[in-house]
Image (tube, rainbow, N blue to C red; front, side, top):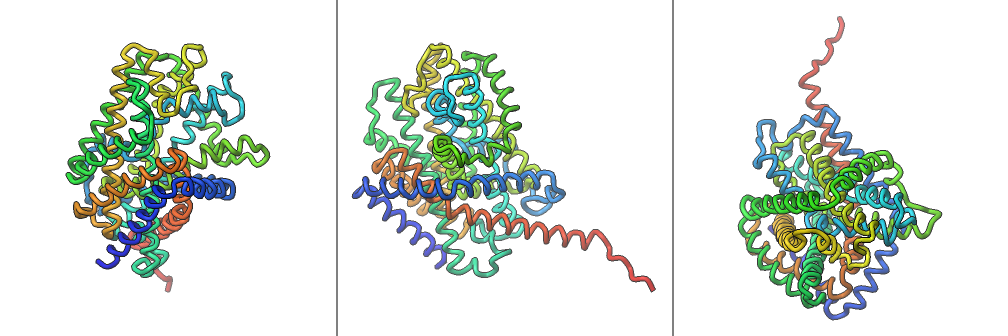
Length: 505
């Protein structure tokens, strides 16, 4: 009980201090986070690229390895949720607001504003824009989530350890995970989770504000975003109090239905053949260039290196910062799945769905811009989606649907984050007390507000990149711990299956 209290008190104290600094000294916080972020991106960019690619390789190994037959739980355990509901829940928690926020904005930015290869507004720029968008939201992203979730589920359901980050390191750290070292690891995981979720909440508030501004001329300002966060904080805390089996499950299914309707509408009303062609062509370009993109650091081109820092390194840090939250949540809902089934569904299905999403929304934005119909690239990032809808029949309907979708994604992400943070701060308790959920819900909202106040979305991004670095080291240790434990289990199984050869007399 003491350990739980210490982990919670220290984490909450650090975050409360950050909120106070953000409110009292906003410019100072913005300057400090910007300087630290720039140092990390320049000094550790190579490290992020290598380590994230290693996570992907390990996931692919587990997918084809014989150990893939092992269950995340006992061999007779059955999944708690149906496969469609399970996929909807992991997808909503894993990408959520980000897909809607960047659906049109990222491809059009790569095409018309700042290209990964330095060439904008050309047919090659179209290919590059979507190929790198696929890269940022595809296999690498889900490998980060997948490896953390797999490790947590394996040690929790198969080895009967608490659902905490520190517990997964027991095979390599021993009983030290029960002392100060374990507490430090769990505190770092909590801080990383808070910054990752707060960034997403900031994006959600900014895009809801952007949509209202574009549609109804509502001012786009910090105060409007503050009001949005306050309203949705009340909503997501209420949902979190209802538990995973009720609020989060229902909202995740609503998310997927709304996202599907929006996708079908734009696919049908937009440049359908262009979307299908660019999707197919980009899939090929993505897999063909995956090794090159995975290690692309541009050491001899300063402009390209700045682009990599702003996009690729930012994304890898975002996924790493989110991985404790998404990992614990996906682990919690994945009991009874085999390792092979888990890796296949977590790695491939959301990636392919995301590819088609970006081909539809990003491809439509690029098509409008390339044909001179609309200048989507001139809009603010949070307004670009609504600028795309304005050029089609049912545009207002789609915009309203998008606002509802963002709102539900907002609640789902914060809801899941509140539940996971309460679990983490109570030593992995799968049914944390409601009091903790409320406290974490309020802290999440305050962090998002403080960061928006001190420097807008840029401050959110900077803080998240900083938080991701220490947790990436913990992820490496977690992966080593998993491989060690699985290897020992495989050897133990062979002892029972393969008899020892008898000695010749």
